[in-house]
Length: 530
Image (cartoon, rainbow, N blue to C red; front, side, top):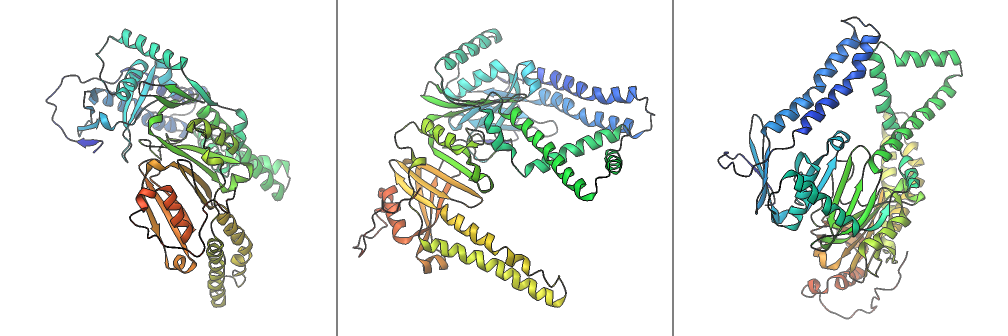
């Protein structure tokens, strides 16, 4: 068990520490400054006490005050300490809870800081143990304390406690030593912004922004909908042009929102390899108003993973993640800790992958073995059957008058699209073994390519459905303790699957595979494709 939560009596008070009190003051100041525009508007416009604007400001003030009050209670009731065996935390107002993380299970110690935290020299420390629970979080401590905790917990020893001034000096010296030995692997290129703006999410972002502006203006007595409507009537360009220009305007607003989000999230991005006492670590630093620094121990690195979304594959976009033990493969924040690059060109992703893996194999650039034509037939079967079945159902409903008589034509007209998607899905399939890596590729909506070290393989799963058995296909899944835990290669030919498994993990397959002569011996290196 890597982490625990329980109710524990507070009998041992030695060594327990508080969070930094500056978090309470900074959130209070931020709350007062955020409410200042509303109160100035009410005062300057001389609004009546019973108006919607005054009530809106009052409600906003009440809701906004919850955070600083919550921070005050959290600061009063939260204690933490670091011992030789574990990191412990006591928290809770009505229900006191005790949580711990054994130090031998700690896999990552990362720090984030919002804009106000940075002004006050504070950091939020996230201690990850690689399990499914949320990271152990200390919100917030001083920057020097965060750096000391990172070094202390990752090095596996507890140094003697020093005065705050000495802690700050020691943290600064450690940062200087690390920076001197860093090797830069990648930095932010502003051309990558284009890969992050062309998205359907622009309309959703625009919707949130417009809704926020609408309600803000409504509080001061301005009806944005009526104002825009009167402007359209005054211009008199007709409904067609109004819809077209409105759609373009909304999309542009969304693009601006996405651009601002990209800049604030990735400003100052750097990927470096820095020396540690145990070896080296991959470190990313980025963020404008909220900074984030993530350390990934190279000793836990097990491979690399690329994702290429279907709708952006034509511009060569890719998302890059490391396959590593102890890193969460998902996150409630904007990106998981395993991601080492912003969305960008696949050529840059492969270049960085070469530097990260630091060997001569380059597994993401080798040709892959294609899957048999029977895998294409299986996908074409679904591409034809689903639209035709839907067309038959709609035709029957149309005959009964439940839907329009022509509704059955809609899925029929989609047949060319489903057939093309079936071909694209088949072309995305591939697998090979190169050097010390197993390489698997599959996926339609997001083509996923994973290069996993063979030493990280802890098991194989081979599955055959009735249709696969009839077509001579198998789905092969590899299990590992790193990354997403499971990676698969669907619809491999039966003979090819055995050869693939034997080459990838001969010691695991030796007791399960029966040796016999084949009339057509399979050369595993034949028929490779890009």
